[in-house]
Image (cartoon, rainbow, N blue to C red):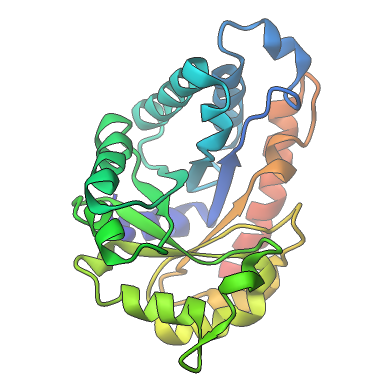
Length: 270
């Protein structure tokens, strides 16, 4: 999927919502545990109820790897279901991979070719030769961890290096990498005050912004500093939407919560 196609979907749906599919068997409705594949059954119901309200889904890969082979099979079924039934939806493998070049190329092949995701989150710490194998895939996007929303982000990301914050150095350097036009960036919603600085470096790139909702990020603040001419934002919400109810009405409750965010986005876009 191209960024132009993604932007067209945003404008059509009046939404830049990304829903995180972080499935925890301890939190899903108990009646689903009787299904042959409870994780996929949960995802399918959430997707069917919310696909018209969002432009992206982001399975966090750890939540599938935790269940071994069955978890991976559920992930395969989820992405296949999305690609076959809602091909206009942008898909993000939240895998946070990053390793030496030949290993990264295997990761890229797994998520881009075998699973057919549109994008993947990648850690930049090992530098360009660990990221460029992902960038080499035409029509795919690499979402670089730039400034995250967790408490430990200040351990490294905001520290000064050569009179620049490390995350600023990472973003500026990434612009020099081969096929850098395929880059997007993760910027936490709880770091909204830094988004204006980031937009000075990458005014036209898409930002994936987690942390709105359960983590306390403010949608209006993020949009104030982060919106560009092509919108340029994907706002992720996971727990607040998918666990809005743990009863049989869970999908409807998720749709209601997603609709509340989408309506806020519609007002902002208008």
